[in-house]
Image (cartoon, rainbow, N blue to C red; front, side, top):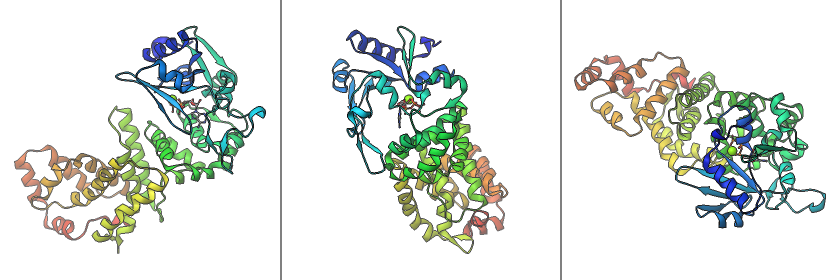
Length: 410
Ligand code: ATP
Ligand code: MG
């Protein structure tokens, strides 16, 4: 059974408070699923029959968010709990009351309902478990517990219909099956193949959120590979026109690096990953006879970001970050005079250096440059000086005239 010690005290206090005010309230969704699977929940969601306005009135530190799907966020100093009102979705009695587009996609869903009705509008059976921390009872109307034991992702209702209503469910099925090591059942696989294309109608803001959930969750490589099987990466990452071995290697190395950092509790940012994923496009656009044309390089950066922006809305603050990492790649190649000192002082040096190491892993070239920077940054001034003067003439020439990107431009 579920141990309340693993649940946020704040979340439990919200459930209690709602129940004391004579509302129904349960923990629901990912947190119940994860607790039953022995995983640590990322966040705690609550479902209740109180309307957003009623919830808002009970909790001072709260805010109603969303239009398509109204929710209440309740905060304390360190946590944010999402409270959703039971929704009825659509059935024979209220057919047509959900706002949908021609493909069947739900545009708005704010029709309140009962707990039982609420279970049917959720995506997968394992996500439709309602847990009361006070009685320790679970409400399970769709065999979610059975499917957890059987390690299966099963859609609630016909997946063809459910994935048309909300195409993001295709991505969610893949993400949950990888995270939990559950199988996706046949019907869902067919629906992903049939309805995956509808992802092109999803807003770039929502796809950016999903991008982060898929690639910044510690199993990015595994998710990327499964998305490739279903042909869905193209809705998240703009394709490089001429994919070569370096492009494939670079993507995998960048994802592996992200996974490793999360495993080691190091920080990760979508900016770094996007800089890496889009790099092959940038050098392809700047390619002139196997070398980088600087004018093309600088001119292409914004266009590449704009193209990606159509898929996933990259928040503004990451744009400069991404471009800094790109431009610093060129600077890292130039090791003359005072330049290395300037490069080292750049606030994005560390990220750029990390990316250089990833490029070197991916391009299979000798790793002289990365090693040089590794020792340049950790040594004192005297050694720094000698590192610059020790570079033989050939290398100086190269870094002046040629950026040595030939392996990446093949
Ligand atoms: P995690 O937080 O680990 O990504 P989660 O299952 O909690 O997983 P959330 O996006 O936090 O996912 O959503 C909470 C719950 O809301 C889900 O468990 C599911 O029941 C329901 N839900 C979320 N998104 C959808 C959707 N697109 N379609 C149907 N139900 C959804
Ligand atoms: Mg959640």
